[in-house]
Image (tube, rainbow over all chains, first blue to last red; front, side, top):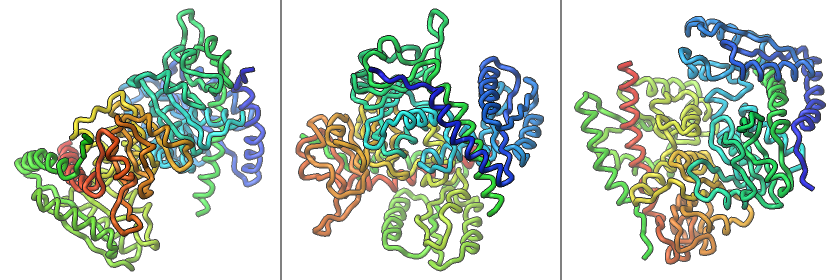
Length: 287
Length: 287
């Protein structure tokens, strides 16, 4: 019987430990808050924002949305962002990217306080992830994969993990998080030759290519554990992952669906990171 | 017939293009200089320094050694380092690490001007390498591996590259440099299970484990191309690599020896990085 790795179950389990940490922080007089910086009102951003607000609401963690006009100048954006960055009541900052094309994405990535960088966008955060330093913030999606595998008791040490995709938001940071857990890691991508054979050898296969249903039955065996990070729309207009779920799920040992898989864990990771940020900021204040 | 990949041949070929770029820089009034910061006089540091000075001398690139007393205080070190960092006549800075234990390695890594960071020690450099941004400086050893393979015409796109070792000075940055060339990359380490089988499947195998002669005949096939990054001393007191050269070299297609292999390319990479730094600094000055 194939085990279905459900994001809602992972988030429900995370909720317990998040509430415990939240109450510990509050007892120290710390009230963690997430600041969301959104320029304009792109539907994708609004959809993720709604999900995040609902999650944080469910946990009792305050949020504040800073909506800035789509035509804001770089100078005005910098002024607004600095205020949020320096506001001691904001512990974590999520900035929707990419910013409109007239704004400087690099500026915000290099100016965000690394201790508030709960979505792992700054070079300092990525350098820490690269080095395997657990103080750093990884982007939420690769962290969600790690939470999911941990929740379902998937051992990583000494296992062969193959990641399809080499982006800076999933593939590369995930490879580093897997290395930190002592997995043997292979990174595949569009130029990989004979990808099905390589993927078949993996104990754990993570699909993060951004290509609808590209992982078929020939990529897996009955031993495979498959995490699907893709969020695509199929020709019938339905949400689907990078894995051809109908073809793959009957074969493998464990698999995460889309929707309802990894994507349903990312806002829980965001909450976890806000609590971690609140801790780091408090420790910095003391030292 | 096994092809021997010799560091001296790679460096000789690099010399031509380095001299051309040096003369181009000079014609623009730029005189690139390497600053070497050494605290104390560790034999390893002195040995590498001698090699670097000889290489730079052969290329006609000036160097300046800043030798600081082993018992220098952090405050005094910071003052000295800031002077070098801000000195417009110094285009690249090599700091021997680790610093003595009473000094703060992190301070120097986070304060070095990223444009002068020719040995790729700063978090900003490693973030760029992680992201595949070729503006960044990778550490010299992984870059030396890339130069060697390029010199011997080894194609990387779509090839399976296996790296044994996950350090921040070789394994991890090398994995990212290989990804940038579109190789499919596997990273092995001490926790990897059945490493010989995994290594045998590689088109290109890079040994960077720091363990004398650990890569034996069972790790390779007649198709393997092997780059040996290890520098160890065997029980007879002789220099040796991570590869058991006598056992492996008769089998494989290409191999780099130790000594005389990758290690003989690192100071050429250092020189290349100093010229690149001089270009980046000049471009920054103009803008």
